[in-house]
Image 1 (cartoon, rainbow, N blue to C red):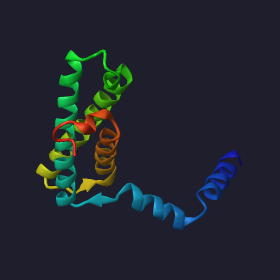
Image 2: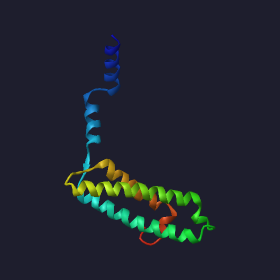
Image 3: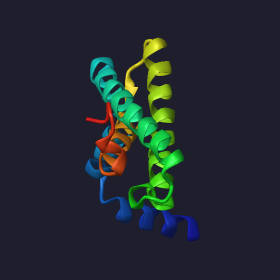
Image 4: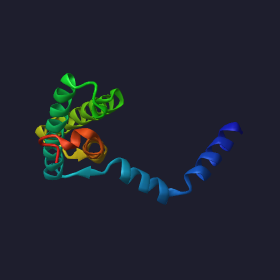
Length: 125
């Protein structure tokens, strides 16, 4: 009896097959390798700006633009972008379609890097 109640609650919470099918489509969505390569190139440009920013800050820690919070954010977004880019490159090299979650992670990293002071350095734009 408890199992039947659980099944009914689960079915009601899903709201029917249409929503479940939409969820399946979102989870399995892919991006073309061309789109993924463009995003990877955009990340490479933003990453070069982030690197230039961190090199600048190494010798100018007292400036406001090089605050610890800014540097941490740049490092965090750069690491997330590198991980996504590397996974995308591996996926493309294996001949598979790129999962949209990886693509979206890479785009988020680029967008986040552009919102930091690193965007003002060479290659960031």
